[in-house]
Image 1: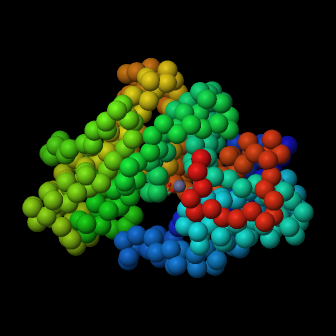
Image 2: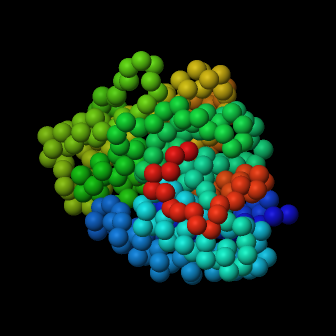
Image 3: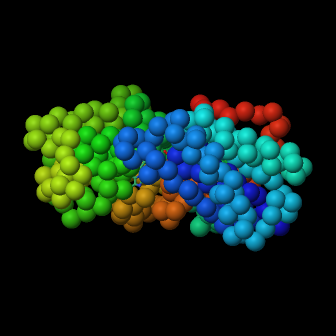
Length: 341
Ligand code: KG4
Ligand code: ZN
């Protein structure tokens, strides 16, 4: 039986978890920084790294306490190496290295995106590969073919904005609170999602790539035309015109994500889909994938919301694949803001 402490600090959540035997989560603590960044309508990197510094110690202690364990009892310490904000990543990486050195434990450097791809396994350990993974978050929108454990082939990426980034920017423009994704999810519910037909990006040469900046601009033009830009938070949330607008935007994003994933499944002859990343919390997206699964005979696995947004349990789940291969990092490894999967 092996136990890994995992640390995640790539963006604006400080997180630590203790994971046992691949997918059994003994504890998972996430300290969100939404309160720090809300008034700026987006993550401020310098403020994020400072808050990580304050939180990392207490968050790790809490994760160990809740798991009923201590550092000497662990088999390895895993940490997100990248991609992400370098100042944020460094806090987790330095903390992990210091603990690993002090207690003589191996350290595992994990790619944040591998963490997201492995997140559905936390609650469904028996998922069989091959699978197509859709990672949709604030920083990434990509499709991967996962032929077997530990192998990932990128099939598509976004050419501009990530899906979550589009949610956040549209919300900010309308005067809705940060982060925009959960707010749009909430106020779109019950609104008329067919009110506006927004354009969608069409790629040439059979490309599966995504693009959301044209849609974002179309929403911006429409909002300006209809006098909905830069609203006051409470009023904007209640405005039927804003709710129809964001519901129509959300439908466009959801339909694009689902249609492209299905295309990838058909092309690769794969019937299992893994849905991951913060935007995978979106209820409209989850419903659309459930419907697609029923209609197309697919198995779609999505984590509960606590494991879709950034967390350390998913980093622990990914770390086990490296632990089993004794793929440990030297103590002089560094954070890598642009790490590729
Ligand atoms: O995975 P995550 O926590 O961080 C990154 O790795 O980027 O994803 C955060 C993103 C944000 O853009 C946020 O607005 C979006 O996920 N998000 C949502 C929902 N919950 C979070 N987007 C749409 N609907 C939601 N319910
Ligand atoms: Zn993430």
